Length: 153
Picture 1 (cartoon, one colour):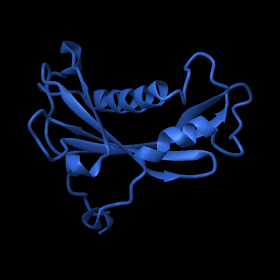
Picture 2 (cartoon, one colour):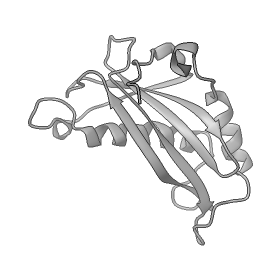
Picture 3 (cartoon, rainbow, N blue to C red):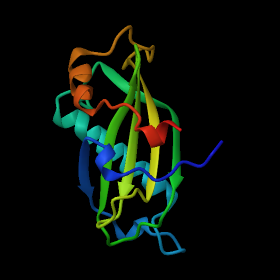
C-alpha cells in the first residue's frame, strides 16, 4: 500500500480547535499516538452532540468503533492547540466512515490524518440498526465529501 500524502485543511468542511494538555506529550517530546485517536473521538462526538444526533447518556442508538487507522506526517506538541478537521467519506445502512485530520496552528497540511468507522447499534441489544436515525443522517449531511483527485490516486 502506498503511503498517502498529507491532506489539506480545505478538504474538510468542519474544523474545531482543540486544546492539548501537558500529559499528552510522550518522552520523545511530541503528542503520543494514542492522543491523536482521542482528538479524533472529540471532534466527531462534539459534532454529533451539538447537532442533537447523540445523547451519550440516553440515545437509543450508539456508534461503536469497528475500524480505525492513522498516518503520521509531522509532530504535534503541547502546549500547541490542534485544529481537528472532520469529514464523512461514506454512509452505509448502519455504518459511517469518519475521516479526521489534525493540523498544527499555522499549517495547511495535516500533521496526522486517519479514519474510523462507527457501526450504529441499538444501545441495549448491541445489534446493528436497520437504518441510521434521521437526526444522525441529517447531522452527517454537511460533512459528506468525495475524495479529491489526488486522494483518489
